[in-house]
Amino acid sequence: MIRIGVDVGGTGIQIGIVDDQNRIIRENSIPTRTDLPFEEQVRRIADSITATVEAEGMTVSDIVSVGIGIPGIASRKTGEVIKCPNMGWHHVPFREIFNRYLDKPVFIDNDANVAALAESVAGISAGTSSSVFITIGTGIGSGIIIDGKIWSGAHHIGAELGHVIFDLNGVPCSCGNRGCLERYCSATALIRMAREAVAEAPDSLILTSVGNDSSRIEAKTVFDAARAGDPLALSVYHHYISCLAQAIASVINLLDPEVIVLGGGVSKAGSFLLDAVKREYPQYVIFNDQPMPDVKLAVLGPEAGIIGAAMLS
Amino acid sequence: MIRIGVDVGGTGIQIGIVDDQNRIIRENSIPTRTDLPFEEQVRRIADSITATVEAEGMTVSDIVSVGIGIPGIASRKTGEVIKCPNMGWHHVPFREIFNRYLDKPVFIDNDANVAALAESVAGISAGTSSSVFITIGTGIGSGIIIDGKIWSGAHHIGAELGHVIFDLNGVPCSCGNRGCLERYCSATALIRMAREAVAEAPDSLILTSVGNDSSRIEAKTVFDAARAGDPLALSVYHHYISCLAQAIASVINLLDPEVIVLGGGVSKAGSFLLDAVKREYPQYVIFNDQPMPDVKLAVLGPEAGIIGAAMLS
Image (cartoon, chains in turn yellow, green):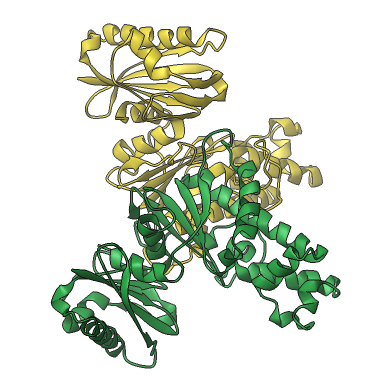
């Protein structure tokens, strides 16, 4: 018996067959086609699942369930996608339409939530019953696991750590608020800090390493320059680490999960990021003379989206 | 059959007999005596429970359980009080000592957590399975209810909303951090804002109504002056409401409970506070075109401490 995990993204849709050991035994992908009518988009996903299963020498009768991770919000009860801007989906009856093409139990949840679930069952936080997964990329995504289950809120609008106010009246956010946490802790934030810094110090390795073209600065540019000992890069890096440490401590002061898991592009900086964060976050935890959550790096990578979706039930 | 709820505070300890309708049928109190040895303090509580029950014409055999709410943190599993600074308790085996004097099941939790539980079972949030209770007083306390149970974290160090970073590098907090949420949303914060404001505008009703003695400004002083139309008071009030609305929206963006309950001294401002907050918080909620948590005022008042403690199990 197999479960299907689907990771829906703005450019591609990844489909995976997941076995009962939470391993992906076959993966497939189709390009996202937001130009098609919604029903056609859903049919393409269902057809691709059938094709993937048959390519593995199985049939749809082997499928126990289908889980869908989306960059948006959905109702667990009704199977409705409430909002998924990248796909142009707004209050669409995903499960109902999907079942016309493939009649299996369908579960839909946010992509950061399913990644959190995957790490908590088959990844770095396996064996814990509570964890908070923070994915650090263009923005900040998060997933909260409590009592072994995804907590996305009573109206499925929670787990948006990136939009907690972190700096009152601070940097404007694309959401319309000011001072959202993701303006200080995302890759975008790190790049903004670096660009602001090099404007004052153009001889920094941050800038010279990208041919003096500040539009080419990435998170990795800053980490590499800091590793190489560039003073300006170290200053930006320390400021960014301080922000991230305070964000992590805030999550601990409010939610105190067993473990906090860092994923996403910025987490590829590995121990250079993690060790620095671990040195700093305890000072911001209120009860820091007590046992407190550990902070770890995610291990499943992009596959967490498929594996976690397949775990939905 | 009755349950006992005990609300431990720095000046007094309230003891209540609670019936199976969650009503207090008899209440008693003893002064807090931190000068006595710990075991003596515990014995006084146990003795007072026995006396209170006997005064009601009952015996200790009628007691099902004893719940203790403390201004600190405790281990639900071991019955140990981990930390309770006001009482001078640090890693003390409360349950073990208590059972020497009264051999009943004993449950201990933080006072804001038990108030959250009380409101969620017998108060304004009755009938919900998730809620966040925010008590606005000298500081900001909070209690999180998920799936009908208190969530205080894996190490019992969570639910400290007051110490989430809200203004990066902002106002110094007594905890040692800067920019903690309670520096912007507590009664103390409102008073600070008012004092700063009157220093520039000494003719404000805020100041004249307290005989030009700014040390006498309380939260109520500001609300009264704002209600009376004093321009400076209105400006302070609007700034404070904006902070509180952003704090509430942050809780929604992260936790999305069914309802958010406001309690504590500041909530006595009633609809003058609530209506303003309700007008403003939705603009800071990310998915504000969806159903979202309502915000309500607590109804149980100080009795929530006794009632909620008695509910612990």
